[in-house]
Length: 173
Image (cartoon, rainbow, N blue to C red):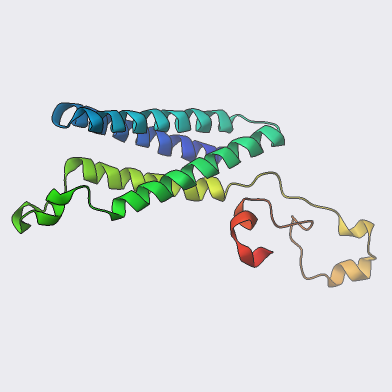
């Protein structure tokens, strides 16, 4: 759990640093509305970083579940919305621009890197287990002969659904 939380923290620190660079670039070369947009992106990334840092030190299951679900929902929505806006051109100038001026814009490159980092954080947050694997000793219920014939010797024999995947995967229902 701590490894996944640390990976989320590192990912969000990278997002914050990239958003800070893009905010500085937008403040220097873009309009006030673009600068305000990148300021909101930076504040949101800082908020996610704070949530990820808080989730690393959680000891109780209830607070851990709350943070993991919160991070999962926010990163999924962010990845989906940023991915959706990455599909559409930014303006009419990109459609009608000549072919020799079609190199990627600096802010657009940062946008795609941030999108990839949000995708990584979404996968990490969704696949983070919500609690420890549940185990019940089958020797308390069945005889030794029956226990020896059991083919499933998994450590989580009560339920293998300990993450968020059953919420999203229909095949497990």
